[in-house]
Length: 314
Image 1 (cartoon, helix red, strand yellow):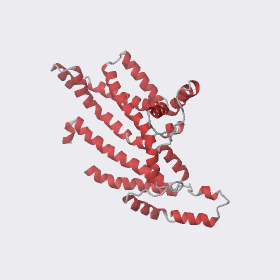
Image 2: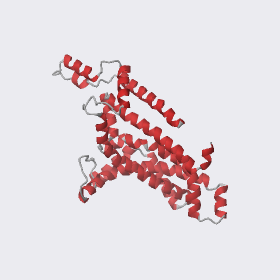
Image 3: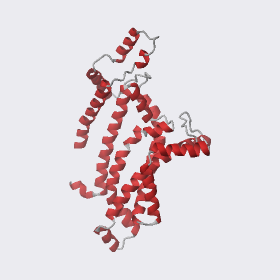
Image 4: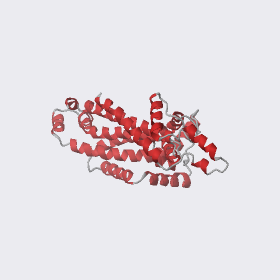
């Protein structure tokens, strides 16, 4: 409850800072009209008055915050559409690519890190460590471009431009959706799995030599019970923090990867809105992102007490 109470002024402060920075930036949302000689100056002024751009930015912030409490994110300066509709249009594409990639990264990274620590200095450990370092070291745009060169241009197996108009209605369209999602999911999944493998392996190596592991083994417990029920449970606390902090980034999307594969996700919407000075869109996306960060940090704190009951006494 204390964390939730603190979260409210924290989120308000975040919106104030973001709104102030965007309002003081030199970007003009109506720059496209200023460059068009067909739009008279008086028309531009009427548009500015209609959008409230001539009001002082503190007044605009109060109006925006009041509308936010009613669940209204406002209207985009560029498309003149409700901001919530724009986000909902892009969110499925982001979840279909970034969300699936993050889920697969966690699903692969945790078991691989555990087995790599248990089978230390084995062939599997060397292979997992090598792949993890490659995935951690290479930037996503480089891996994405390499996959496009090999599988799209050379082999012509996969499309490199994401078709957001595709609707899954049968097995054929499902196959097309999988084909166009493979490369961005592999790029992001490899990067996420690499980080999680490194963290999990490091934590497992710290836990395995401890006394409670030897005690559990001396009691005759099966090795799977010792590893999955004791070692992994204690070693997952830092990994839970890493995963919880990373989940909100699914909503924001992976901007670079979305740009490479032309995925019209929330990240691409945010970049476009920043360039156009579309304050309502930028503020709404960053506000939702901040809410998710606070929420999943709270969930991580709860999971700590599930993994280690001693923390309930802290």
